[in-house]
Length: 168
Length: 278
Image (cartoon, rainbow over all chains, first blue to last red; front, side):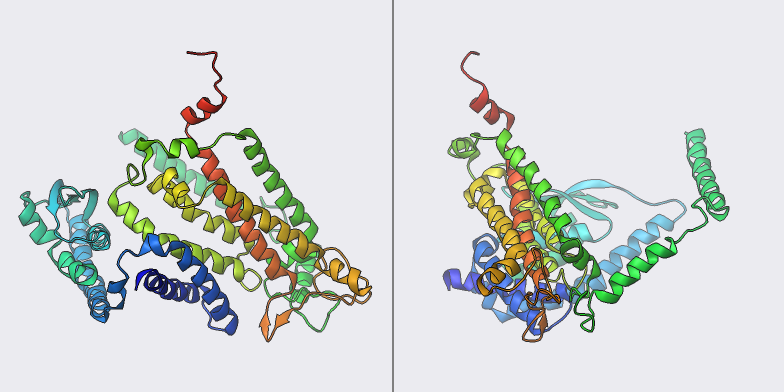
């Protein structure tokens, strides 16, 4: 694998993004896209990918797809409904606080997936990450528990399960 | 607090009411649209910009803005580019001889230390190539859709800027994105722009045919011109080349200035401070 594997992974990603952003599939788009994607992937391959072998394990993409559907149609909807209820409720029942939430994943991208999943759902925002402690500090609109393990149970358990299978 | 809120709210309401009253009473003059003569000029551009039936006037590009910028008034854009690069030359002249090379070897500036959190760093790693391809698409489709070389180049410069802020300027330099390569990129872009502007004339010199500086499509007295299409794909003659070279020049130029601006004051002082002070 090595460098060629890294380059081909970044090439496929950047080529798709180029064509989708251009919004048309003519020979001009495909040729310029291939040239641009090749140059870009040669420059950035080492920055983006550290273990190219993972790029060719199809199972990971299956988990990615499953997670995308689950995240956008279950977790996002649930979080939005909860925050909407809190905003519209006459007494505005919020109980804000910052809790420590540990994580167990190894790779940076898995950590990023969990962090962005927490931040992107309304009601929870990752304030900071401590890689040495393997923990996030999360601002939670309804901090019902403060013990790290229990908070993790209700905030990031699902995200972590999927992130581990996609990136670790 | 209550009075402040009331004042803010009432001033907003008064602003909206005053503006709507002014507009309905004709504050913009009696011609809220451009004058008919001006509109005639606009429709002339739109009529000729991609019109093979009028080969004398057409720029062979469906994107009228790029056609005007690089063909109808190309000389103006050339000097705009020159002004922008004079500004960069000025920045380079001010910072001459000052370099971060020595600070790069300093142990405290080792790559990986400092910068924003690991979340930002990981996201930036993934975003960098995506920013570059999107910006390239803006530049390479400048003759077809809104965008162009300057817009694409500015967007491309966001990638090194992100790395510079999220990691550190030393990380950027250690990856080879330093002053000299960016200067070379900028110079290649500028040379390309000038060669494109002179392309028809250079061909004319060798073939003995009449040609103009900044010529794009063939004209009646100057049969030379750059190809509007390459095997069916519309490239609009010189417009694609101008956009590509402007992209390189602007991306290199902006990155160069970002690097120069991020040189810490202590480093600048260590170069220009002199030895008179203890």
